[in-house]
Length: 152
Image (cartoon, rainbow, N blue to C red; front, side, top):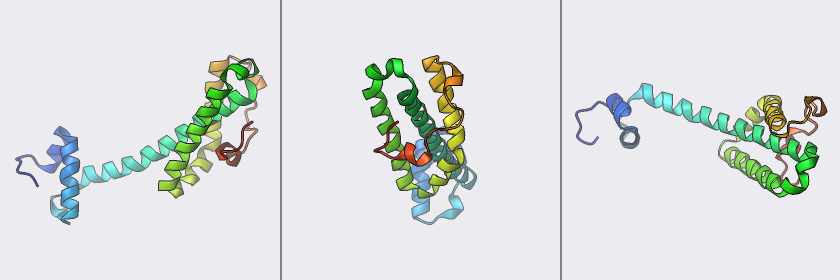
């Protein structure tokens, strides 16, 4: 560890980047005695939560844009290309996360209905269409939503 009078936990509070650097050095050396375990555990848990939040957020935005494509007829001609680009982007971001963490596919399945409902609300806010015109239950499956060749 670089010469410093700060403990690792104090370093965590004052210079996070340096704390990360020093933590990596300690792990490589297998110097577990000097690790700041409480903060290291918190950061590792946070990483997992971050990916779960991100993949669920992308799914919500994907559903929103699929609903735009399917139901917002007055804007379809003007906005189709942009919506299609966004749909592709959200699908790609989900795919990248799943490549690194395939087990997160379960998170997509568990959160599909909730993400659809949130996406539906965003769509209704943007379109100002009558909420009764847009089904509360998804009219497309999770598999269709994630299929790069499927569009409503």
